[in-house]
Image 1 (tube, protein in one colour):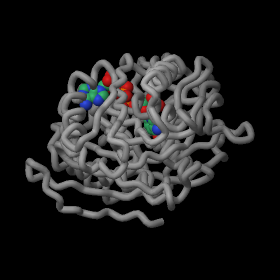
Image 2 (image 1 turned 180 degrees about the vertical axis):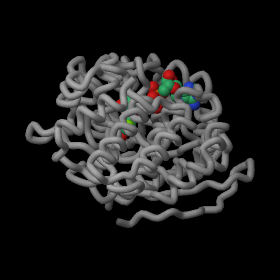
Image 3 (image 1 turned 60 degrees about the vertical axis):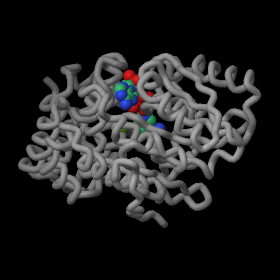
Length: 377
Ligand code: NAD
Ligand code: MG
């Protein structure tokens, strides 16, 4: 694992520091630059745009806010952009949008060395990454994530893909970007609800493997919610660092990477049971994490005070701390549909202690039912 946090101490126009992390994946290693005003730092992408042409893919919400700034920045380093604007929404992360991208690339005779740049949240990142993985059997891919969730989670680790009518994220590829630019200024326009949902995944990193970060979050959550630039930058880089370490050790999720699914088995049941889109993913993960903490307590691992501590942090973030009342049977039926089922057994990510997660397939049915009952309202 050759991952390290490097403080480049490069100054941007606004005298803000840029932090650069390295995701260590041998010959597919790549840097993540985190800072404010990075949209105007296309020079950080220069090495990856040999042809002086790039295709920027965004959506109808993000493009009006940030496309012009990025296109001008690319122009200033001599790069011409083609833009592709998709409709906004998870429901458009599908084969049809993918075809829209292929059509535009083929019509413009886009070549194998022309990079695809994703400008947007996780939806745009996932679909652009999959288009980049498959168009001409693979073209360069660059990520410019503009949501908290995409900056701390989906832009790290190389999972790309689209949804299928029969299941979410069912078609995809592992495909790493060449470079990621996470511009904290773009988060200024993010709706509050999306900000909070993204923070659920940030808290997750503290819970599964980074107790000092969890403590930092307990001390600084209000700053994050107020979008304090320094706090955001710290939380994003620390989250990326954690994810990069996990992914660097287990790129294809044969083991440790599954720990990143804390709260997700319950969470997916909630998202699915309520109908996709009714609960944001991060909201479902928050309630799901409370369930996982409660179950960890029933397993004899977490103290009741520790479960209360987890609940308190999600509450302060303004996230749900209980799931909807679907009934234990329905939850279990929905959880059986989860991708993480192995040999017919539901595998849970639980907490041995705060900052220390484990994966277990041995959860007594009665405890599971008790947790679902206690944590849904
Ligand atoms: P999203 O991409 O739908 O973005 C959320 C909303 O915010 C959208 O309406 C979007 O247009 C808008 N938006 C984005 N940036 C904005 C900005 N700066 N200002 C104002 N509005 C902005 O959702 P998301 O939460 O970023 O990502 C969710 C997607 O990510 C899901 O499809 C999920 O499957 C995927 N995901 C992938 C991975 C992975 O490893 N590849 C990990 C987690 C999630
Ligand atoms: Mg998630």
